[in-house]
Length: 372
Image: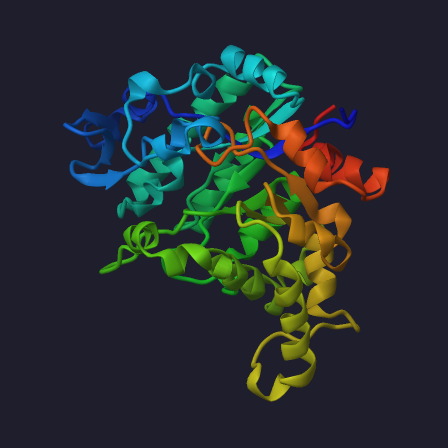
């Protein structure tokens, strides 16, 4: 068995049924997310009748190895693994899986971005961030929480970044696609500056598409295999917006991650950005860098990727940058590598140099998220 330290750069909690009922700002309590026990499933709603949250596949870790035919979207909270909601049980599951530590993302929070009202969404995020800080507190060396931050109002997002930094959260989740202004807009400058100064990385996680009027992209994504197959396309758009508008030139220590999209898409994307910048400038009315840097230079310095089981992407690791790759288990979701994480990582990393194994399996995540 391998001896390197495993740290999952993308695992999840499972929001307790009473999280927002007990923690949200009282003035939003009547509109807060609540769990409804329906005929075929337990379903989350917010602001009355806005449906969000996939209960089933978010809680079925391990089933894929023994009973894959039982994986389904529907589910009950009564069947949820305790490790998703209780930190002590979570640590026991880490030990079963030979994993040292977890970087924690939400589960239901990945789709709550479809709530239209911005003030309510910010209140939902603040309550979640408070709860997550408490969840991590018994095991600060093994559990690292990432906040959710609403960027509809950039000033408010900056204030929340500063607050969650004081709470001990080590990163922040921003939407893959914002409501209005894309990430090349100058309004986001205070957000980039604050994240850099606070040493808080920003994550673009699959599923976190902000609500827009007259659209329901999340529903389309859940039902369209073509969109699911090309899920990283939105992450590419947002990363390209940052790179081509010079965000990383102005904020050289800012780190932004593409989370749960695997890896193999990145080499083509990197090469294509360089090609556009060097050879298609007549049609590129964007930022020009001060020096000789190319988009690929900023990608390799500032962008990191979290993956689970992408052997092809690992073969292309040097084109992406070994220091930018971080393994993840996705516990306790259905596609998780739990409880066979070490076996799976051993196979993916077979034959590569030991120093690179150490980085990809855990050391890169340890450095970014400040594990001991």
